[in-house]
Amino acid sequence: MNAANYLYVSALLFTIGAVGVVVRRNAIVVFMCIELMLNAANLSFVTFSRINGDLNGQVMAFFTMVVAACEVVVGLAIIVTIYRSRRSASVDDASLLKR
Amino acid sequence: MQLALQVGQTAQPEAIMFWILAPMAVLAALGMLLVKKAVHSAILMAFVMIVLAIFYIAQDAVFLGIVQVVVYTGAVMMLFLFILMLVGVDSSDSLTETIRGLRPIAITAAIGFGGLLVSLLGRATIGRNAVGLSAANADGNVQALAQLLFSTYVWPFEVVSALLITAALGAMVLAHHHNTQERPTQRQLSINRFRGESLGSAAGLPGPGVYARHNAVDVPALLPDGTPAPTSVNASLDARGDMLDYKKFDLAEINTKVEEEK
Image (tube, rainbow over all chains, first blue to last red; front, top):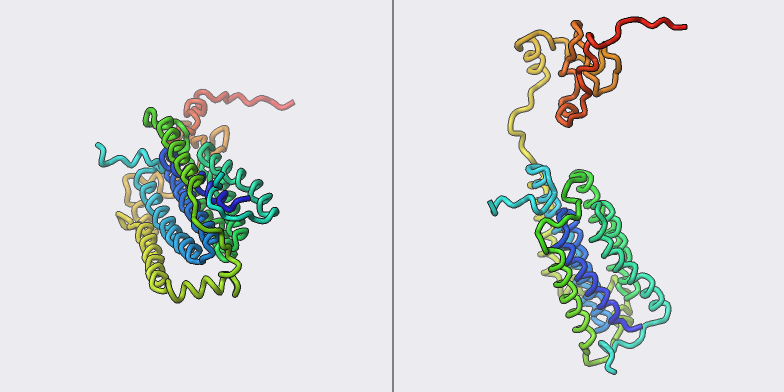
């Protein structure tokens, strides 16, 4: 097996995550799809690190994980705040600027 | 034919692991989009995370694999499930499309984008053979990563720690909420009961079902004159329309004749 196969999986997962962000309405599911995209990028980092024999890629993946954790914490807090004021976790309902 | 990124072949067991787990991961990710309930999405997501952790470990990133399990399937998915329970199920879980034509456009764009990525990967060559991490990991993966993290990357590392603290503070600020009015004390509530408009509720509100034919929570209590007491049923049950009809419990409609037991 070619190690580049991991890159194909990573590309597929990233694409699926992107579709999820566009298609799903539940803000929490949208968030999970963003996490999926970040993880797909991490898989690429790790694979390239292996292909190049260089650990810098793994350090990058580590930093991505930290930033993703921060993003989840703040993002979920925002979702809860929006839910508290609007009683809905749908991304379509937060359309105050449109009207 | 020039194969993608002449990487060199990996060991047979890894290939078997890959060809079993990779389709499952992609299917689980697809399932994430297709299932209706957010909780099911979360479980499929956790599965994808675990598969990725296995991939990391298979690719000599032992530390990252363990961190992936601890951070993602542990902390992040727990947080997601926690918020899901807090927010509950609502209309946004449904899969009906609100913007017309969004779904076909999204799928077309996704096929284009994915095809672009995959074909790009298929055509790329890296110009040299794969190196593998056995040299870099000679002293152990964790030691080698620590060496990098605390020398070359020490400044980004500190910045990221500041980011983590800021995120924690931000979450606390967002989660904090002020009461718009002061909460009445027990003394205040007691005074209100006795100095209010009537003394009818001075001894507390009647419980549901008192003197009625049923004592379920959705049955209003009957007052001494036989009329139902709406205050005896929880207001949110009333708002939801789950309160039983008063009429059935009016004294006039109750058959007062006592049937003799045989």
